Image 1 (cartoon, each protein chain N blue to C red):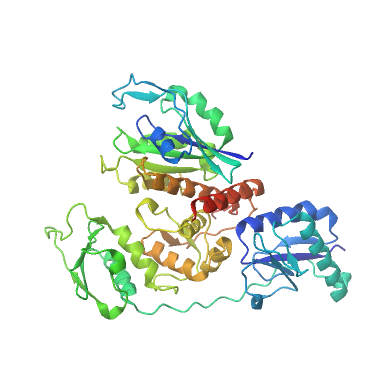
Image 2: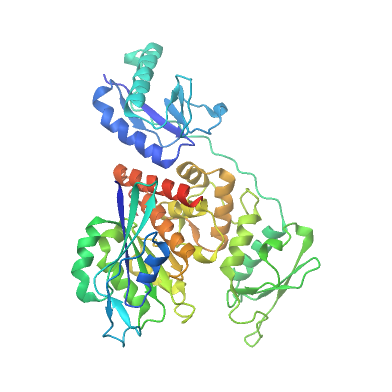
Length: 325
Length: 186
């Protein structure tokens, strides 16, 4: 009986994940076992990205993908660029090892990789940014969103008018202190004829929410984010008006295409979890990322188009090099 | 040599030629002629065939930028180019007569690209005309095409950074959509 084994990835970028998937499919006839791609990094063979920590080895066989231009003397490493022959050789070696360990008749049938234990994320400390974020959210959720006056040490007041989703800051946002003691908030009740302290047109509230959200948790989930839940993007932020990195754009695109937990997004984009959570804190505060409640997602089939993915993935990489992103 | 085709479309006066000039590393090849439709866009000339520009990557790989004419009588050219295109930057001038309607119409015209995440919208001239706000474009897309999350940015076609943001978002969106598992909403 043909045994079935699984391949998992740890901190491998999506381009290489798709490349491996495509190569495994092409090499199927040359192998004596069936190889499935696992949804978690726990699998029979775990391929580690160039920067994945060795201590996180969780496979029966752990192999490492070399970085671009890296020369390795370790025969366990997969050289870069990844070639079908190298992958095939590694899988044949794994098949031989596994048979020697358990015998063909005891080799596992389709073994879904065991679910990774849930990751417990620490909650964020109550910084000034976090308190400001919470205050804005509460006011926006109330019947009458009002005006918030933000007083920072030795600074003129920053005014937020939630009715107009605008704010006015007499200083650059990155000069705003982040510790709780340095910020004092005053919530001002408004009536229909209360004049706005924010001159027209003011600055879009999204800019402030993005700034506050990215800093509110300092790598930990803010109270308005549950990183274990799946989130889906409602719509893209207006990146032409927000200071951002290429990583933010990558994460937004991923959350736009499927509902993901923080760990899923980290794995999919090859981005550290703190950056993922900071981005989720910001997007959720802006109302752009929603919990995927009540929507059942069935993985009917993978619609991955390896040619398209490798073409675009490679193109993004070359744009990064050219423009120094 | 590897080549990738990016289309830039939109109504007359949206800034397609300018956007290509911002992105291109070669002098843009334009086919401008006197504008006989001053009611739609008050400018002296307009593109009657194609605008063309290039970005070269790694010395051997080219991104070919084609600006397609905004007038609907040239839409047979859209079909020809769409087949070869990786993605589309749709520029919409906010001071047009019905900019949101124009956008929805053009998304429909390029539905094959749209279905694979290959459309990004750049709203131009919002400094001239403040409304509709970008959120209104987003809301209309969500209403008509609830399954897509097309990026919508306010852009100045003269600003290279803005145009690069738009192009990068397009590439990331295509990549993410093509890797995503198919969803079935129960």
